[in-house]
Length: 490
Image (cartoon, rainbow, N blue to C red; front, side):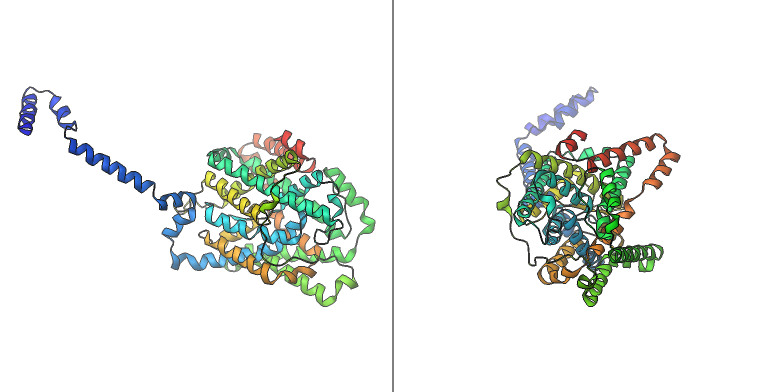
């Protein structure tokens, strides 16, 4: 009866040309339809809130593992991970010494942080780990905070073990603060700020960083100690005034290693079929230098400075070092500067390496990048690592050797772990000039000042002024830097 009367009402309304019939007919008058709609909405809500979806949102690795093409991608990821790992081992040993930390800390920082980022980051080709500029910033910051830190010229054999221990603890605390900054920014969804990083800013940042890092390593090529300096003119004065102490064997060996590294890069760049040999440059120089010093007994015969003892084994848990945090304002200032520079480096590298036809499973998500870097640094702070970020050189190797997913990072971490457990003693006789050569050759490709200025002059002349201004900012930040100056510049 109800259905019949409703049908008659619709018919009568249609006869009069009205639209009321449509309105009445579309109104959900039956209670059964409301029940079914509610049940459907509840089902969809439960599906969206399932454990799998929560894991997929928190861990991007769950997303790409779901549709991972094992036959097409697995071999490429393994080869890319091995290539990055072979390059990372000698580089990270060098960067740890630049940071004022024992060499083992560089390997620790290329182990668990790399694994954490592989599981939580969004870029399949960004190779996370120690980098030269962050190492230099950490060294400058902690030297100004910890009295007497400058006396430990070789952290593997510190002149004052108590000061070195305090320095190591402070590095772990800075890593914790950096991770907190990243995680807060990521959870607040503030990744959009990275879209305001213009090409002149990035070019200036890379150029200034290359100059700073290269000059910091010249002392290992010259063979004499150069006092730490916060300004460029003071550093140059110290280098020139000490030339009478120049050790020709150190300089000759260092220049040979730089020439070999640049030659390998040049050959790899001009021959696509053997492009993969570019990743073998650092490990080749490390191997040859170790063999040369060992067979020729150059440490004793020619006074060649070597790395010294490196602690083997997996990293110990250092969460107990987090508190108490003495000198928190100064440590926080250092962490803010390192976070800013690390974010600039990682995002610019990830964007440069991202392909336009990139798989939809690996979109570059700035917010997820912040979270990935945050979890990586938190894992490092818990297990004996100093702040880490994306490396341009190693990321380029990951791209050109065919990295398709975070599995390449897992392979890299595994290779570094094997090195920690079995091969650390090999690096004891590695000469310091070879480490300096690896660092200098690794950062030289970042020097794009001339190319950038010429491009901006043709395309947009005002950007040239921005580049010069940005170079002044970056040089001031890194050379005239101490905690308050860094914050005031920011």
